[in-house]
Length: 267
Image 1 (cartoon, rainbow, N blue to C red):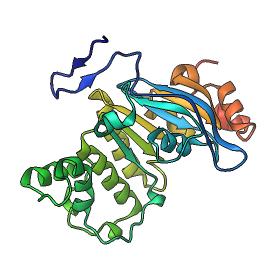
Image 2 (cartoon, rainbow, N blue to C red):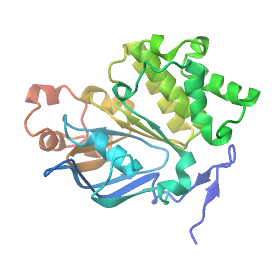
Image 3 (spheres, rainbow, N blue to C red):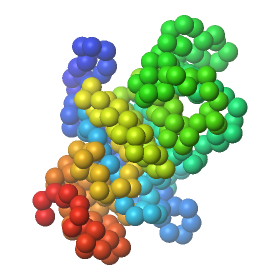
Image 4 (cartoon, rainbow, N blue to C red):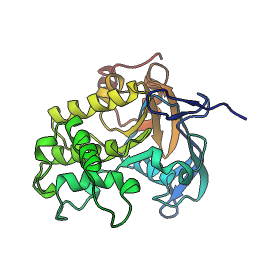
């Protein structure tokens, strides 16, 4: 039997390093005749920050949603901390693209964050002081505590993104999957979000983000997966974020001058 150690501060299960917080094998998704994701393999070690990058239409978001079971798979498997998602769902938080959310729904910021506690609250159970405090603590962590009573639709795009991150923080997950968390946000919000994500990583938690800005990959992440329908390469940024891998992933869509401006790994 594999040994499983507990983190002393929180009692969280820490699995052997080789197992991974997320392991995807042979995952294929199709929205028609052509696959959106083809036979993708991905291994995300615990306690890491991984960017999934590639051109538009490369299947980055689809890969995450298929791993979570949101999008049906044609084939392949995904395991979280060595288990099917259903066994460890509480440990996994997902932050969708902001554009996919109906922001006209009439609810307060605090109520959105309380949704992250639904496993503790259950259906029709009263929100107790400890639940409210946990939600406020999560909002404070993203700099939004003073807007807890605001209607979610009244917030800016960057503020809405912070609220959805706070909802995932309230869940107390060990793995955070974020789909384009920096899309359409201002520089201050991007800085605030990346600071929170790095703090999570430093606490031993795991972050995976679909990311579009190649210029910040080396600054924000320690691992990268480059994909274009299939995963072309994955690993530490210093090893996988190379000129050759970028050229293969983007198929000549990146000019040489663009690549030269990036902080790349070994070539």
